[in-house]
Length: 115
Image (tube, rainbow, N blue to C red; front, side, top):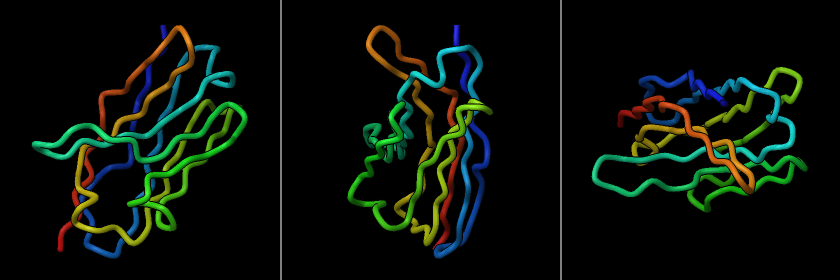
C-alpha cells in the first residue's frame, strides 16, 4: 500500500510563490508516474502537471511558464514550484501516483491566492 502526503499549501498574494511537496511511501515510486491535480470549488478536478518515470513532463496550458514539476526518486518526493500565482490558481491540490495497475491519491493541500 502506498501513502501520499502533500504539504506546502497556504495563503499567498497574487504574484507570489509556493512550493508543494508530495512524499510517498513504498518501493514503487521510481517506476511510477506522478501527477499534480487541482480542484476548485464547483469545478472538476484537472491535471496541472505530470512527470513520468522517464522524467518527461507535461503541463496544463494555464500553468506553463509559471509552474515547474520535479521529482527526487531517492527521497520519493515530487515537488511543484508555483510562481506568479493568480487568484484562479486557488484550489485543493492533489498528488497522484500511478501506472498501469495502480492509482494512488493524496489527501490534498489547499492553495489560496488572494487578489
